[in-house]
Image 1 (spheres, rainbow, N blue to C red):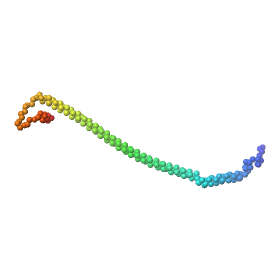
Image 2: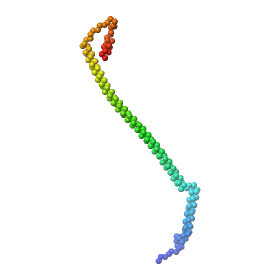
Image 3: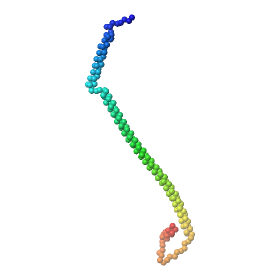
Image 4: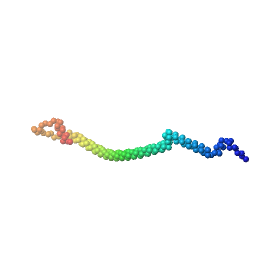
Length: 168
């Protein structure tokens, strides 16, 4: 059989027999701790719970403000983007108009170039016919002219000019 040790032999055994005393001592320790914490908070003037609530509300307010700023900036970016799109469309329309005008101008330039070529050929033909007419003129001697008494003699230059005008 197992022998039981006497009650006075260990200090744990002494308290084991008085559970009310242990509970009362624990209660006194808890009450002293709570009182100490309450007095400490009252003395320092800080309560962690209220600080946490205030900090949480401040964070929520900052987050809401940041969200509103993001919404405003997004709207601003959308407006700027739409303006850029409108300006780009205007530039594209202007570019298309310039291209059409350039094509029309190139067509006109080609036509004028062809007309200048035709006129150049016509002028060359006239020069050749004029040169051949001048070459043929000395071969055929003109009939001598008689001067009237009232007519003044002409200088060679004025006679050459009037001949050139008559041929032209």
